[in-house]
Image (cartoon, rainbow, N blue to C red; front, side, top):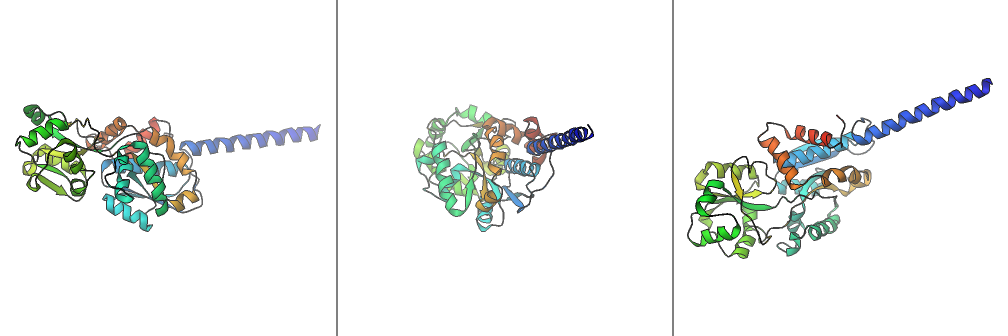
Length: 320
């Protein structure tokens, strides 16, 4: 009897330990674990804007919650700076946009970049040759459009790019601010000009090198240097708050820019579980969701890290 009792006791202890272990594993997967895995520290970089910080912070927090060591490199720099650092191995991961593949691997200006699936598959396949892995993208489209103040739009009958072309060709006053590389690209402003039949002179444009649309929007709101049109992104959080109308593009001119986690191949080989960790998070991020998250940073007084954390907890990706 004593032997049987001892076996029962041992079995109970073993079952309890397995239950605790199982709970610990589940907790790790949902964001409550702290056990660090052995392997390289993942240096996660982002662009300078609020969306870069929010999405970069989501990646960091999800990896940390699953025991993958990280180093916060958010707000690392402009798109070209981050890309060079990623290729050089100075950072290990970032958030990039599928439409940017036309500049990285080409062909620039090809209509395939306006197809969400073809654009994604093209950059995913070709960038693998550069040692970079594009994971599951968000369904959001953070493409570039033209924005004007609502009172300006009402005064001049502007709702769409067709209206804007008519306004330009009729001699309307225009001062556009935006990213210089976008203005020069055949898939950027030039694509709009070709699609709708208008051309802006050099003295009608202010091209900046940083690509930070928050600055473009601020110049538009304030009318700085006569600016009355700005390059804006579809997920900008300040559009509605600041009375900005995005001109409709019925011809679907610009490439599709789906936010996507991009990692160095060595990191994915070290932690193959990363794709499964991030996939449901990015699949949940619609254009409207990103607009709201960006708005919380721009006008809610919150940090990108806090906005990321609150979202991940609210969706059950992390525990409180």
